[in-house]
Length: 398
Image (cartoon, rainbow, N blue to C red; front, side, top):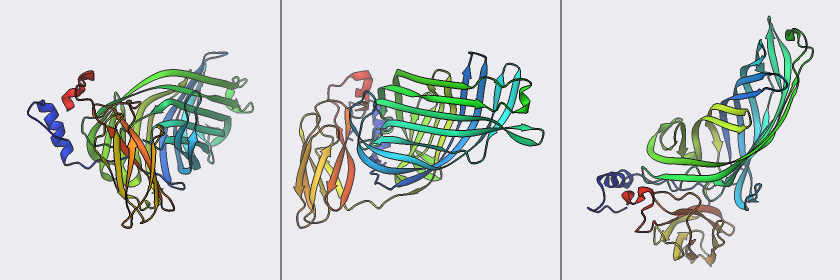
C-alpha cells in the first residue's frame, strides 16, 4: 500500500499499521481435516398456547468437526456453491436450566449421554457460511427431587440455517487494520422442536403439561457489518486476527489452525420464540493434513482490475499439469509446470463486485489451484477499488 501527501492522516495511520503486518489469506482445508470444538450457549424457548411455558437452559456441547467432502452443493433458493462439508461427531452435552409452567418452576439438567449431530457447509472460496445444521435427538432432561435425579422429559431439536448468498465473516486476505465489509443475505432458519414430558414425574402436582411439537420456518433479510481491528492474543495464540461484528460479536482467526480459534455472539434467533444467548465457540484441538507442494502463488498485477487479465504464478512439482479456476465465476486456465516446477496461468477477472465489497477492495474471489497428482490450494484474488470511488467514504482509506 502506498501513501501520498494527499491522503488523510487517518488513511496514513492505516497504511503504517498494515505495512509491517503479514496478511492472513484464505486457508485450504483437505478431506479428513478435523477440529475439536467446545460450544456454550443458553437456549430460550417459550409458548403461550395452550398454556404459558418457558424454558431456559445453559448448555455446553463438545464435538468434532471433520471435513467429509469437497463438492458443489445448493441451499434452498441458492445457487451451487463449492463447499467444504464438515460433519459433527464425538458429541457430549452437559448443562442445566429451568422450566416454568404457570406457578410451577423446575430445575433440570441434561442426562449423561445426551449427544448432538449435524454438519456445516463453508464456501471453499472464502469460508463463508452456507449452511449450519444441528440435531439433538432424544436428549433426556432430569429433574432433582430430594436427592434423586428423575426423568423429566425428552427433547428433540432439528435446526437448519441457510444463508443466500453465503455469509462472509472474513474478507480474506486479512491485512488492512480498519478494513470494513458488509454482508447482505437472506437467512432461512427451519426445523422442529419437540418436548415430551414424563407423565409419571412426581413433581407435577397433578397432570403433566402438554407436550410441545412446534415447527419453525422463517426467512428474513440480514445485514451484518464486520471490521478487522488488528492482531491480539486469544485462545492461547499470541497474535490472532480479530474481527468485530458490532454491536456484540467477535471472531479471532488463527492461521496455524486454519480456523477461527474463538468466536462470541450475544444473541441469535432460530425463528418464532426459539433462540439462543451468549454463544461462545472455542477450538480445543485439531488434525490437519500437510499442505501440498504448491508454492509461491502470486498475482500480477496486484490488486487486479475488474474484467481484465491477471497472471497467477507459482511453483510445484516439475512437469505437473496445473489448473486454476476462479470459484463461482467459471474462469479457468491450465498449463504444465516447467523443468523447475514454475508455472504461469492467465485468468480473466470478474467484471463485478463480490457479495460483500469492503473499503479495501471491491471483490475478493477464491481461486482454486489444482496440481495433478500433487494436491490443491486456494488463494484470494483481490480486485482494486476504482480510483474515483466515493462510496460511503471509502476513498479515505486510499
